[in-house]
Image (cartoon, helix red, strand yellow):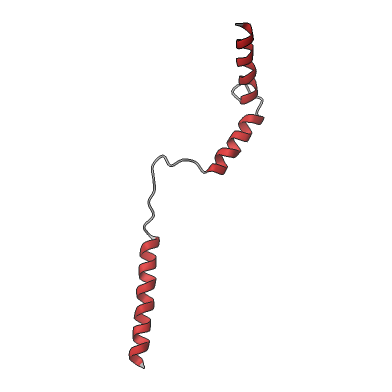
Amino acid sequence: MKRTILYSICFILACSCSCSAVAQQIVTVQDEPKNLNTVKQELKQYYACVEASCYGPQLEHQADIAFSS
């Protein structure tokens, strides 16, 4: 009976140690791409922006160039 309990405890410890070892193997990548949701939000802000460096004014500027040529 004691041997069975001891084996059970050893098995549980071995499983928990191996799981934590797997969980610690996190790889970080340099220059990892942005999260897609973050990019979507940035694009929405760019499209809604009215500053000269944003979508609408740039599009109008390019259209003016095209029509004047």
